[in-house]
Length: 221
Image 1 (spheres, rainbow, N blue to C red):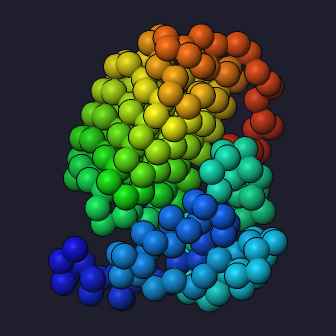
Image 2 (image 1 turned 90 degrees about the horizontal axis):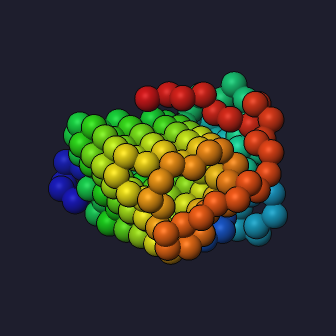
């Protein structure tokens, strides 16, 4: 990290992190390493939190990022923050993010992750450590890319999709909204919404009905 980057971080608004679990700790580390000020955690249960996961607990002037790995849980928490507009995007300094990619608000990009040229990452997405988002990939709002996920060029990931650790997706494949991909699965063909995908090559089965429309965040590139 350069001195200029550190200086910019010191003058940024403080970041409040919703969720004090494992993902929250990773986000905290990224914020600190980037030299940005931290307000602390908002969590309904964690002792180290300074307040509950509610908008009225956000300190004045702070921005917020929701650090909860499950897209459905993240969606439910975000409903509490309806109308809130001070969202932080946190990128670990060791991540590589193309200047020709687009990250929406509320995104977390973890250590050593990669976001390629002309990729688009929607609101409140998690791109965890060592995950790879290839060129021309579209990742819909609320999706979670677990560690070491690999999305090859031209992949489309629907809203609220969860990809487990080490999952990979072949070029040009589309995964429908709210599907869940098991750890290590290799996706070679398109899949409709709300399916569970597992295996190599992965096979899918319908899993559940999609969440209520109010659970989804609007696309914001």
